[in-house]
Length: 200
Image (cartoon, rainbow, N blue to C red; front, side):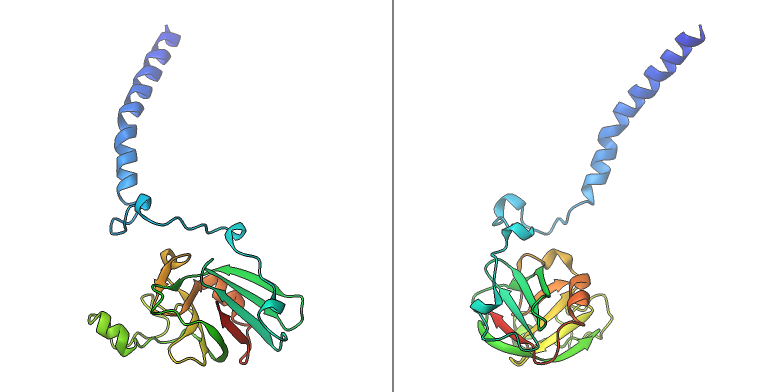
């Protein structure tokens, strides 16, 4: 008799669970993904794993290592770093400029570094989007420069972190190269002022 009661209880419990499951799944799925982005089927596929990046060698881009080299590969959306010791090599997924018009290619160098940088949008950025604030202080979670910034000798061009992780692997910047905050924090102490930079 007790066996029969257990079976009835099990049957009732499993039936209740099966009725509840669709509503639980619906409740979880409504907040799981942003609703303001284009459907993934309409987007150009982006491969974000390391195997999608083109292998690069510093000798193909620089005459010497100097104090180190950074190569921003716009097409594969990756940032390569070679240390001055000839042994250190790091590869990071990155965000790249939104359009060809905003993309600058060529040689430059790191001229300044800043932890928790403040952000001041350029006049061109404010012209495109008048709702932008005049300035955002460093450490603010809305700061698009994230936790670290390395300034290039091209005005308003940087390698920096971002709090908005959706931007990495996409054409999403106004000219800068963006990294996950944890990646820029790994790279930041290695990159010296004077590090050679090339954007290709």
